[in-house]
Length: 431
Image 1: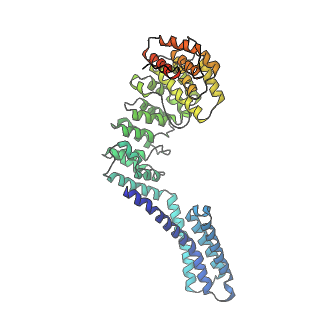
Image 2: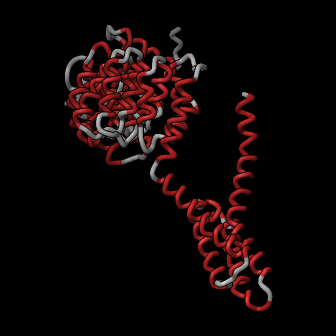
């Protein structure tokens, strides 16, 4: 904690030093012209005085306006120094004074040096050098968190991620390190990377396929989340059936964030994952980012009509999707469509149950639909939701009669749900 506090206290000092250094560099041309103006006697130095005034005016605009303070230093230095050189040439072109030769040299060398540094930075050489230094520091680190997943949020990892925008080679060199913490950190620095050189993505995919640690497999899958190659995406989709829940969730996030384009490639793998009894406790597929595309919704609706665990998990996944859609923006057309599916007896029962709960949660159940759902032909969980909605408005004999019918069913879960409604809505203590 003391290190963090000292780092925060040093930030204002670094900011002040940066401002002072920036100001000094920008003021140099004006100061040089001012001294030159004082060295030239008489009226022949009018152009030098005008140049000096112009330089200080430009510097004032750079210092006083927020936009000027945010501008990169390189273009400003090149512009001011070259303009100052022009003013010096116009004001006193043929002077034999040693000072004028020195000023010309400074006004030529400094912008050339800044321009050379700008070219070097744009080439990516400085970023690559910084990435190599950070990679060596990670490789030499000895103090690591006990949890492998915590290695992904280290400050050094974030700094390495920023330095890898040109070339991923420094991080890829760490993937053969003996310590799993170093490999996780290197993969975390490549999360959602877009630009891969030939063979790099395949290298990380092989690492994910053979790594024993779930944290390494999850980090590798996340690193490949921005792939555009269909074959690699289909291979990545196989991690939806990884033995580790951590890896399965990472694969879900990596694949579904761009599901509108990828769904035809991954639909088969998604269905196999939803139908696998080994993962029945995973529940719905949850992910951040864009909502599921219409093609995915259609497939999940069809899978909800099948038998087995796939129907339950497909319905739960659609429930998460519709819940997010209603939470982000209430859409009357979507609400009407959900009501239609709930009222339609041909809608898969698991999906109807999930949708009626969503409508209840979002207070989108209308009275006509609720009364229709009391019918004995509907599944018991749907009837129970309708009963609770009617009893919440007051005494309702039909709802009470339906509640008695449900209480006679030989099902423990339904019996407990009925008892809960009786206690909350009818005020009868059942113990």
